[in-house]
Image (cartoon, rainbow over all chains, first blue to last red; front, side, top):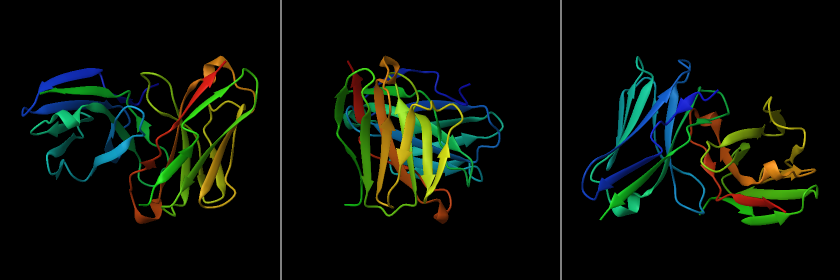
Length: 112
Length: 114
C-alpha cells in the first residue's frame, strides 16, 4: 500500500513560470517530509524538507508547503529554469524512524 | 567532498549467479540503507544498519543479504538473482542522532540479469 502518492507522473512548464509539484500521504503519523531531485544516471539529491510543526519552508527558488489537515504537500519552484528538469520525489517519515516512504516521482520538464 | 559512493555503477550477472554490490561513505553517518528501485516506481527500502544493528524490512526476500564490516562500508549480496531482481539499487546514509535529517544517496548500481 503506497503511503505517499504523487499522482502526476509528469509536468511541463515554461522557463520563468512557476512549477508546482504535488504530493499526498495517508499516514497522519508522518512528521517530516522531504523533496528529492533526481537526474538520469544519478542518485536522488536532497532538495528541501519541512517538519510538521511548520506549514512552509523556503530555500531560494524552492518553497515547500504542508497542509496537515489535507495530508498534502507541494513544492513550488519560482522561477523555473531548464536545469530544474528532473524527476522529483516526495518522501515522508516519522522522527526517530529510519525509513523513508517515497512517492513514485514526477518528471518535470522546463521548456526554454 | 563527503559523499556516498557505489560500485560498480552497472552490473550484469547471470540468472542464479551470486552478485555483490558495494557502498562506501565518507560522511561518517551511523545509518546506512539499501533501496531497490524499479522503473517508474518509488524506491523501496530493503534493509538498513543502525551502527552494527541490522534491520530487515518484513517484505524483503531472503535472497537479499547485507553486510556492514565497518562504519564506512556496506554490501548488498543477492544470493540467487532472478529476472525480477533487475533494478537500480540505491545506497543511502543518515545521521539521526542530530534529529530529523535527510538521507544522502549514492548514484546507484543498475543491475541487469541475463
